[in-house]
View 1 (cartoon, rainbow, N blue to C red):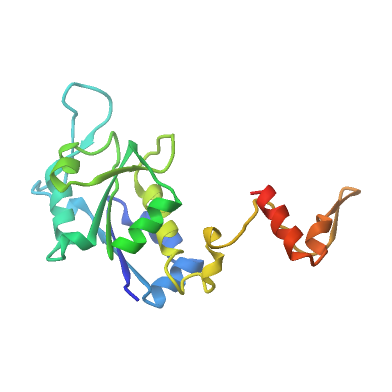
View 2: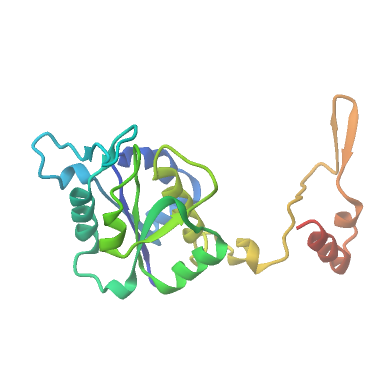
Length: 217
């Protein structure tokens, strides 16, 4: 089984510490099923003060991350890898919608995923053109940086790699799943009101249970 390596271009690598050091992703890293590398553009800038942002042409609030240091960071991440085995993702509000189908496609086709995390007003658009990166959005909203989207993409792809979830059927698309789930006790009482598990789930009738799950997807 090939190992997936995520290369994250970010000014704030410590933002990932808590997420990578907990639960399933932590175990995946310890068992070497995935690998995560960080590249800080400040380490690749020519500016003696490690400055990597500039005022935007055309005016506007905020600052824009320069092209040079970001491209140098990505170039370091790519190294001598076969570019056919590398996916470069550029997070932007108007990018292609990220979903389960996209995560599955990347998992199957690539061993290296490079994610460029913007900050402030964003990244010089020439970075995307020069690197032939694909613009991706995780939703119709704006965040303060690309670190959270990078965590989302890392998680969604990683959980599809055999062995990371323990049981591959835990990936929802591999089974009939419902948005409604229940566990013990059968009757839960809260402030005098009783809440019951749907009877069909207690019936043992697998055909009817699957029908119920389809209707509540």
